[in-house]
Image (cartoon, rainbow, N blue to C red; front, side, top):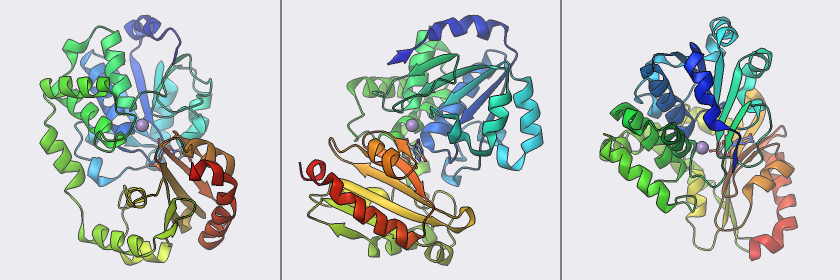
Amino acid sequence: MIDTRILEITAELDTAENIVIVPHKGPDGDAMGSSLALYHFLKNKGHKVDVIAPNDYPDFLKWLPGSEDVIVYESNKDKCDEIIGKAEIVFTLDFNHLSRCGLMQDSLVASEAVFVMIDHHQEPSDYADYTYSDAKMSSTCEMVYCFIDKLRAKKDITPQIATCLYTGIMTDTGSFRFSSTSSDTHRVIAELIDKGAKNDQIHNNIFDTNSEDKLQLLGTALKNLKMNRDLRTAYISLSQEELDRHNFKKGDTEGFVNYGLSLEGIIFAVIFIEKKNENIVKISFRSKGDFDCNTFARAHFDGGGHINAAGGRSELSLNDTIVRFNKILPQYSEELKK
Ligand code: 5GP
Ligand code: MN
């Protein structure tokens, strides 16, 4: 854990008026949950706070309390640049390299604000003035809870804050089943329920709001699933044409990669998703046990993340990306067969 004087931020917080909170590009439940929890916490303390997401996020997160106040950088660049220019403190949540902010990176680099990182990914870079980084944590939401606790402010956790934090812990732990889920995670979750998080409603809002298109797309994804039993690997691909055919909306492929991992004997699962407008293939990696997705994604697909969950990208065609992946895989034969 790196915890560079995180409590010294209290002095900065006492004087700061304008605060900006930034989740990573392609924000997920943990990024939005942690950002909005911190948003409510700081706003309730009297600060002027803006959450600026680098780009839009899935509809299944838009019920989160405070979601209506989130500004999307890609569609409000000038306004966001002005807000970032005035910020005295910038909190960056759920990422540890400014390159994870997409177009927003330049504006952040130019800012003279004090930067605070709260994040649970491996290998943090050193852009922040205050770094609270712990790769053992289940989620950034669990860390925001600990941050509030360190500030001795647990009494200020409202039902809204509890709801946001519960959501991010739940999504990042695959509903409390990944190995990152510790007994402390469960204790935090218990407290969040006591503070007003409605666990049944949150699960319903996230998991039981599928569209018919999304389920049909899942059918296509499962038909495309391929297995390399020898190397205990399964992968799925979705072409742009397949996405279009099912009226793909942001978030519709969330969780698909886990189906590969649910196969008996499979410890490494991958999904390749063609993104024609960006000219890339977006890749998600998931593993069980010791197989290190972070190292794999960093070494071959310009990405990163955690041991059991990472992401990356390829600028080759979908087909060539998969051919390349299958060529790389045997290099990991020893780790995959272990
Ligand atoms: P996902 O596959 O759900 O997009 O991401 C899995 C994990 O890897 C998340 O923790 C996410 O923040 C991280 N991740 C996804 N894409 C990238 C990437 O391109 N670079 C890095 N460094 N991390 C990523
Ligand atoms: Mn996270």
